Length: 408
Ligand code: HEM
Image (cartoon, rainbow, N blue to C red; front, side, top):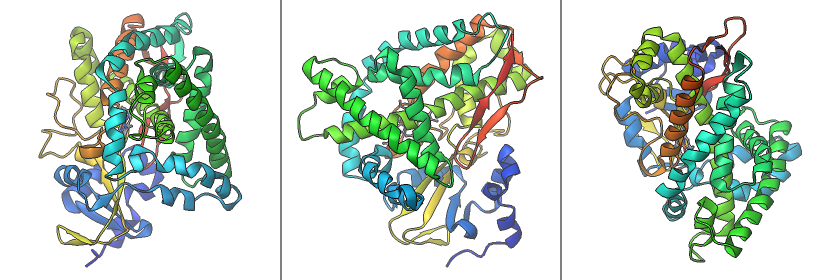
């Protein structure tokens, strides 16, 4: 039987109250403790808040990730046909594939993330961090997100994919257009149009990079995939998942870097602790991932009716897994509402869990570590610029600053 919802709870549900997005954590605690499995009628969706349930549902075969059709249905009719032309690529995203295709494709994409390929990126991450800070070093103030944390992951992805240096700004634009299409609700003619334009350009461009690598083998990401045995993963699947990397590996990294800086600057004791013990930087990043996960909510679709603690989830309904809530579940993290960079890292769920767990997690952590170490070393006196506003990127599924003005 579908749970009867107290209308007061429904009205005040955090996702329906924009002002609550600033700080949803008291609500998440309330739901975790009182309604850990919650049906929210206005959205016709289920929300799951407890750590064990979220972790278990991440690898429950009764739930599917195949949600691309839902996106196309929401596109304004004026541009729907254009989106339909690109949709076959979007449907090949690993993120939207169930087994057996998911397992087959993931095996090959994982090979592209081989340790050596990621290891080689260390110098390139360092190079990008220095290049971006060189541009602002003499200014005395800058926007650490717009000028640094936003561009760094795009430059790193360009290096990872083997994009020619003069084309890096195109990668930034493509990735912004993919993110706007998938993250802005409702989808507009503008976001859909830009996505189609960028996807068309990127498909051609990536096919060119693959052709170069077939001609002259290289052991970078695309080189590894270009030379796998024919019939194992198609060229279209490789191109599609290269697009996915721009969507998955850009804004989340910016959010992680921005959230870490913001949390440290607003928790002076923790920042002093880090200054007196720089080895705690890795831990500070882990704690930020737990406390303020860049990706807060992940949807799944029920493939069949099933029972979850007395609630009947119906086939076709969306089940939203709250990472932000699970990471503050007191049964897994003592004193969870406390930001503590000396905490022993636990098994937070910020990179997902199970078959779809993040392929780029080691890369993301390395980007955060190198960029923050470089920032704190080169600009040891950074402070929030109180004369300017912080702008946040906060919606149902993402959290992090877009503009974070600093003085130094
Ligand atoms: C702090 C940064 C990041 C966060 C918080 C993050 C988070 C996540 C999460 C929660 C998932 C699981 C999605 C699901 O279960 O539906 C995921 C999947 C994925 N991520 Fe990340 N990610 C980050 C960075 C990256 C980077 C840098 C890359 C690549 C360059 C990347 C590539 C992927 C891919 C390809 C998947 C899909 C895996 C699959 O479906 O099998 N991510 N990520």
